[in-house]
Each structure stands twice: as structure tokens, then as C-alpha cells.
Length: 291
Length: 119
Length: 133
Image (cartoon, rainbow over all chains, first blue to last red; front, side, top):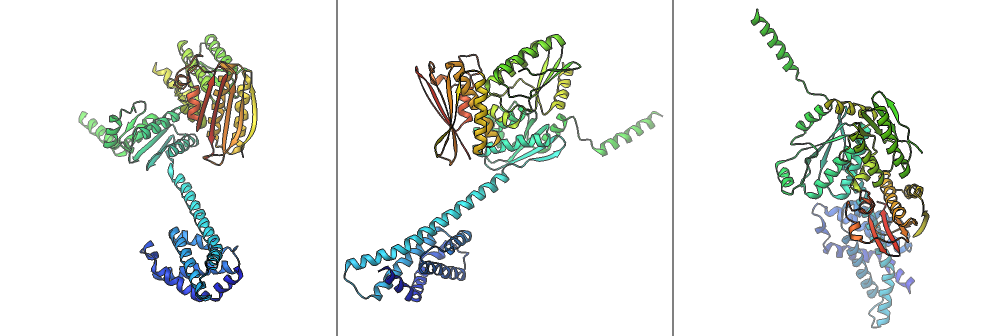
């Protein structure tokens, strides 16, 4: 029975492909993305049907399913493309088979045809979906790693002073990561002072403030000091309104001001060259006046 | 097991090289206080670089030592607390707020000198 | 997947150190980061000390488990001591009947991911889990 169905499908492959492509054209693939050209849709459709047929011929077990679903993921097409495609294939195939063996009134025969077709279509569909979601999970975990790498860079500015700019929302997981990077960086760079710049943090609520305070306390324990910089007016307002106590470590509105404080803390300061020249001229003028 | 306490001019230097158990920590508290008493040291640097666990009990013993030494006129600075230890202490809610800290022995000595000069 | 990895009896003060060293090694073998190893070892230290201080005798069991993450380390601290009279009080920061910092149990809860405590006058059992992320 199965052999017979398979032969019918393979004999009528051209017809099935033609009808299937027509059916797909009518469906909503074009809506998936306006940027997808008609050409690439047609090309992908043809590839899709080739993959299906090569799997029917070889009774499954080919690698092209994997490659094809990976391609769909990379193109950014939704899972719906694959499921709709397989559904269309199922209905087209059943129709073609029924036409081939002529009208049948036997429910049993009809059912066995349905079952026979499903036995081919479902494993392919399942594998496609599994491969698709597997690829998708891979991408998500890769992006997570990439995001973590972006998460908390530590910039040694000069001897003893390091800056950590924070960008984006801080949740508990990120806060832990930030704290780890921060402390390891302090040790690695031998930083006496760390400036934490929160200019890029959109919202500072009690949670975020709590994480920042904990990080600052941990920095103090390893023997360094924190200065919190980049406090915008609205953040100063929320901090006070929420009753968050940041008095235990210095805060500054800008990185520049914080950096000056950091220099003082490490026993250095910025001296302007022109200023000292000015002093010299003044000294000369003074000495002339005295004469 | 006893932790060796070295004397350098008016300072005492301690580098803890063992996993601190309760008994060793208590013994150390006693040893340090009597050493401060007999040497008249004004500053103590306690280097914890090689310590990889400080639980709440050890933290209390060490924190107490700082207050006790302070009563006897000696300033204690902790140096070299490892990031993992620091994070763990913060997690269990121990901040050692009254204890001065520094990155390493050298910075610790500088800090001690600065704090003693301020007095 | 669920299996007991090790069993450390607690009867004397030095067993606290033994338990946390065993725990740290297991955590290392399971692939926990050095920071999580410190968290786990510290939590074990607190649990073992509680057994030693309040019940004199007990044991710490290490199990590998799976759940919200594929790999987790479950630590069971079990004793047959007098039990904790007021569990909710023992979970408050700064509460101590022994003159400690009172950071023990609430500290353990913060160090680990899952925390479960059962106590009666026949003893206390605490289950904690750290998930490998």
C-alpha cells in the first residue's frame, strides 16, 4: 500500500510541485516580510519542495532538512512558513492521489490514503520544526553570550583609576555579572578607585540602586573605592524620592567631575600648563613692580 | 595551628595562609591582641589574599579583632580580600563597614600611615 | 541523574572545614564558577556550624540534581537535635541565639537558589540547591 502511494507521488511529482507552488503563492508568505523579493521566495519554495521529495525518495534520513531549516532561520522567516508549506503539501498530495486512483467511495481506502500520506509528511514536518527550533535556540544562546560580553566592560584610564560604564537595564543576572567583572577587573588593573558611570542606565529603581550599592560595598571589601558618576537630574530625583541611601560612597553628576575626585583620592591632580606659565609671568611682573 | 604574626617597626604584619577554621581564628584573635599589648604596635595589616572562605563566624571573629585592637590603640587594615570572598560576604549581608581595606600589603601600609597621621 | 555524591558526618568542629572542602571540590567538578564555589562552600560552612552548635551531631549530604537547570548541586543538612523553636525568627537578619552575627540562615538563603527548612523537636533538615547557569 505504502509503496503504491509512494510511486503515485513520485510519478506525479511534477504535478504536485506545480500545484503546491500555486497554493503557496496564494498563501501569506509574501506578508512575512516586505523586503523579501518574489524571486527569493520562488527560489526558496523550489528548494523546499526538493527537500521534501528527496526525503520521500530516500525515506528520510538526509541532511538537507537540517540545512534547509537553518537557511530559513538565517533568512529570518517564521516557523509558519515551514508548517504552512507542509500542510499545503499534504492537501495537494492527497488530492493528486485521489485523482489518480479515481473516485472512491470507500471510507477505508480514503482513510488509508490519509494515513499513508501522514506517515510521510508528519516525520518531515516534525524534523523541520525540531531543526528550526534547535537552530533558533542556538542563535538565542549565542546572542546571550554576545550580550554578556557587551555587558560590563572595564576601562583602565590611568594607573590606579578604572572606569566601568553601565549601559542598559540592570536585572539580577546582569548585576551579578557586573559585580564579578568589576571585582576581577579591580584586582587585575590594581585599581584604587573605580568610577561607575550610570549615564546609560535608563531607570534607577530600588532594585538597581540596591545592586549598585552592593557592588560598591564589595569593591570596598577588596580594598578599592567606588565613585558613582553620571547621575542625571531625574535619577537624583528618583533616588531621593525612593529613600535610597547612597551617602556611603561619593557620587558625581559627570565623569569629568568624578575623575577629578578620583585623582585627588589617588594623590594626583590636574595641573594646567598655561596656568603655571601665567603664574610665572605674574611673578616677573611682580618683581618688576618691586624694583 | 597558629598564624605567624610579624613585627615591622611599629606595625604588625599577618598573612593568613591557611583555610581558617573556628579554632584557628579564635587562637589568632588572642595571639594578635597579646602581641599588640607586648609590642605596643600602632598599626596592623591583615592580608587575606590566600583565604578563600570567610563565613559569618569567621567574619565576626575578624571584625571583633578590629574593634578590640582599636580599643588598645592599634588600627587594623584588611588587605587582599578575594573577589569571590567579597561577593559572598555581601550576599550573606556582612559589610564590615568599620574595617578599613586596601588592595594589597603595600597599599595597606600606605593607608595605615595615612590614617595614623590624621590622628 | 539524581544521585548522592558524598556524605559528610558532622561531629566535631574540624568537620565544618572538611564539609566545606568536600563541597567546594564537588562544586568545582560540576563546573561551578569560582564565585559560586565560594558561595556554596560558605553556605555549607554555615549549615555545618549550625549542626555543630545546636545539635552537636548530624550530617551533610551532597546530591546532583536536575530541574530548572540541567545541573544542580543539592545540599542536605540533617540533624537530630532539639530543632529550631521559631523558624520565622531564625530567618531574620541579625537574629541569633548563640552570639553570632545572625547572618547564618538568611545568609545561606541568599547564597543559594532554593532553600527549604523543616524542623521539629526531633531534628532539623535543611535542603538547599544551587543551579549551574
